[in-house]
Amino acid sequence: MNDTIHATAAELAARIASGAQSAEEITRLHLDRIAAVDEQVNAFLAVDAERALAQARAVDVKRASGAPLAPLAGVPVAVKDLFCYQGLPTTAASRMLESWVPPYNSTVVDRLLASDLVILGKTNLDEFAMGSSTETSAFGPTRNPWDLGRIPGGSGGGSAAALAAFEAPLAIGTDTGGSIRQPASVTGTVGVKPTYGGVSRYGVIAMASSLDQPGPCARTVLDAALLHQVMAGHDPADSTSIAAPVPDVVSAARKADVKGLRIGVVRELGGEGYAPGVEARFAAAVELLASLGAEIVEVSCPHFVHAFAAYYLIMPAEVSSNLARYDGMRYGLRVGDDGLASTEQVMRASRAAGFGDEVKRRIIIGSYALSAGYYDAYYGSAQKVRTLIRTDFEAAFRQCDVLVSPATPTTAFRFGERLTDPLAMYKSDLCTIPANLAGNAAASVPIGLADEDGLPVGLQIMAPVLADDRCYLVGAAVEAGLTEQWGGPLLDRVPALKEKAR
Image 1 (cartoon, rainbow, N blue to C red):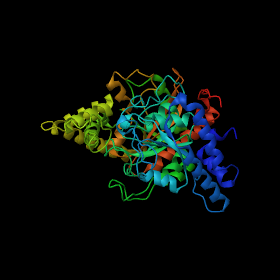
Image 2 (cartoon, one colour):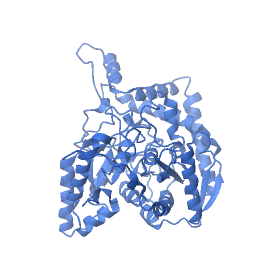
Image 3 (cartoon, rainbow, N blue to C red):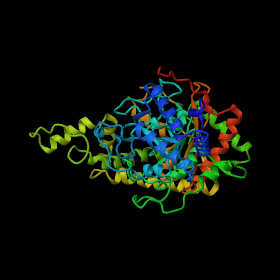
Image 4 (cartoon, one colour):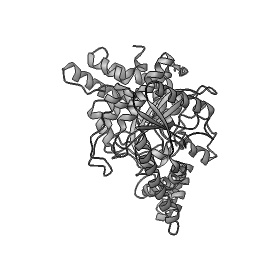
């Protein structure tokens, strides 16, 4: 079927359940697509074709036997290369873990397999999830299918690009400061950061443990909700996992009704530094929500202006702690071990060779922030600001059901444009960082193309802790309204990639 790779995950699941199309055929077509275009995009670090086809055949056998199928049974999914998957390399896009093959699965991978999703392979990312462009990967950058000369966002650019290039209908990401939402915004896809603790972190290579949160990536809001439902839920193996019912995100995505909802526009997330095309598309999305019956109010979150500074102390401090284990002695790449070098020399050589520049930068910043004499001045002060940001959210949610803002201040920038200016790179996450610091749910949904460059813009929707369903409710309403205006999905406008001759 020519339309298979363009179909939504919900549509593919329905075809499989009805017998209209086999899971094996759908998987083969996506593997063919990866083989044809990924040389240009570099979304995948590893493709697991043999196991994927075996998983698909097992779903077809189950369906033929009359056994009940899970809602996404047989649908292919791509997994960010931070999630342990037994038998497949898990590298975190770093030389430090280049040859590591985990002997166990992450909880998220186990839940995908238990629901009979078909894992196509592992996607590219910024090294150890540190970046906003997927340029820091040790295995080459991922390119944005909208413009191969531009970044696909980061750190989860591989997952977002795989969706936009129609290499996979679903993908998994992690979001520490915007690593799901910012790539979704610049690729015209949907990305959701669940409530912190809503999806298990067990078996996910840690960057900053109080901020990291796995979440779903998709091309439609309903598809993201269906994947969220599979991933979420309490996990005793993760001490930060919330023992609470998963919000009914699927019903919310199907309802898509914002009548009577109070939607707050955050005053501090806009203005200077935001591209005109981004602000224009955001204003149009807010007008759409008002036309659909939502009440729009402006709210102030005064401490959001300090979120950026607080995050870039808390996150590196946790990076420094988490990555201390990769020393060439206990874990990770080992070099210089010729029987003569001292332990200290092996550690120094291994970390120098195994880590890239951005990872080293963050380790140094974090180690400094945690050092004696500076802990209270830097890390301790940043944690106080984090508390103030939570207070801002609580006050805003007393006035509104959800908050909205642009998902990122600009559209996708060109490769190399910010590599030599770390501060400019970090500012890609200005809008997304507050939700990570507070732990509440947030999502990015596409709202059109910026006039100045014709590239995608995303709307960020933020909801209270454990009110993830509100992100889907609002996101689905925006999606339905804009799809009608556009005459079809935004991703129908992605420029065609040249397929390799087969």
